[in-house]
Length: 267
Image 1 (tube, rainbow, N blue to C red):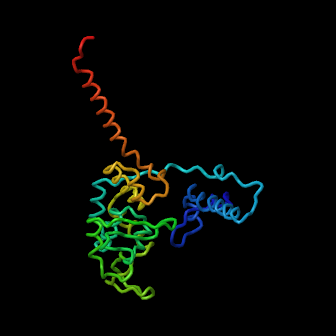
Image 2 (image 1 turned 30 degrees about the vertical axis):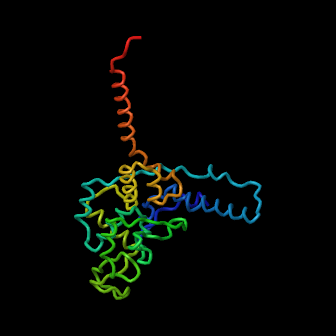
Image 3 (image 1 turned 120 degrees about the vertical axis):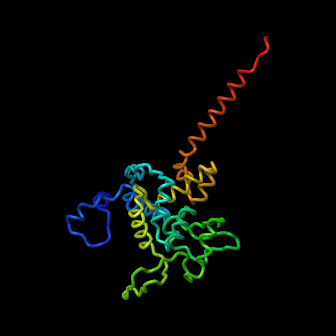
């Protein structure tokens, strides 16, 4: 099963010839791990909880394929400006919220008004793994969300249809709730028109985590803000503290130097 999955290629929308399909890259080791080995491991765990006994259970850790360390990409000031300049007006609130919240793509797209409470200044919803997630509505976030009220009865983020579509019952100029696929397409077009390279949508989350840690210096705070179950996931951002460590070490060295330079009494 694992060998079969490793031979599959990344899927793309639209029809393709056999040659075009063969030119697509193979799926990543991380995808293979999540879609096969981890699934089988959970199946075994469930079976054991139901009193099943396995004489030769696989050694799961040895079966996992090697995965590269996930990179942490930060958005540069000039890149942020380029994105802003190329942004469609109706998508501005969505992308502003993405950058201000650090939430995942699906979490942002599916955000409902029932989860937004301006009174308590909180967004409360179910996050990854079915856990309750609370995100604060800061002044910046409120400035993004508050004007959007009334655009859609259920969902927070919308877009304006540029073209009409009778089959989909879309009317040109009308607002509709943003979809996962629509948001991804909008991002791909925005990235291409802005000229920002080597930056994925998920990197907005990395950018948020990196900047928050640099500003606060608090890993536990960043873990909570990003809704990480394990602090190990947050540790990927720890590199931003290297400069702080260097400054602290230099400060310690300077204090010792001053201490040693003071005149000493002869014994």
